[in-house]
Image 1 (cartoon, rainbow, N blue to C red):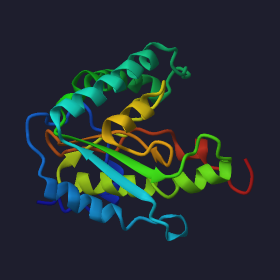
Image 2 (cartoon, one colour; image 1 turned 90 degrees about the horizontal axis):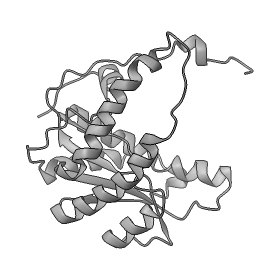
Image 3 (tube, rainbow, N blue to C red; image 1 turned 45 degrees about the horizontal axis):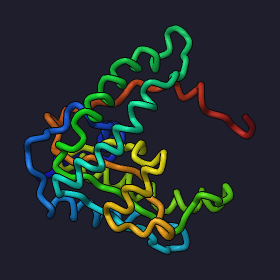
Image 4 (cartoon, rainbow, N blue to C red; image 1 turned 45 degrees about the vertical axis):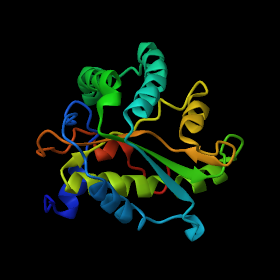
Length: 215
C-alpha cells in the first residue's frame, strides 16, 4: 500500500517520527527491502556504491543496541542545549522535541526493526574533502529510504547517539561489522506510523538563511 503523495508532499511531510511509531505492529521484510531498493538508486561518489545496510530484528540484539544508545542519550540530554532568541520557533518547539526524543530513548528496543546504514572506510582522520565525499555517498540514500518509508505509511528518525563513547565499536562487535574498514552512519528505528497525517514543520524563514553571491 502506498499513500500516493506528490513529490512535494512527500518532501515536506517526511518527519522524524518517535512518539507516533506503532511499536506493536509488525513490519514486513518485503516492505523494508522495497524501500532499500529505492535507496540504492541514490547518487554515490564515483558510483562506488560503498554502502551496506544492517537491519536488526532480533529482540535481544535490539535491546543491547538500545542500551548503548540510552547510555549516550541521557548524557547528551542533560548537557546544556542551544539558546534561542525570544519568539524563535525553535525555542517553542524545543520542549516537544525533547519529549519526543525521551519517548524514543525509553522505548527504542520495542521498535519492530532497526537499521544501521554503513559506508566503507573510516573517517576518523579524514580531511573535510574525504568526509564530505563519504557522507555524500551514504546520506542521500538514507534520506531516500526514509522517503520511501513515508510513502508506505512507515516512519523513522535519524539518530546518531549510539556512536559516541566507543558505542560504534561496541555495536560493530555486536553485529559483526568490520569496524576498522566500515563507518556506521546512524541508527534508525523502523515502524508503521500511528496515522499518516504529517504536516510541514515550522522552519526559519528562507530569508534568514539564504545568501546570494556572498555570505
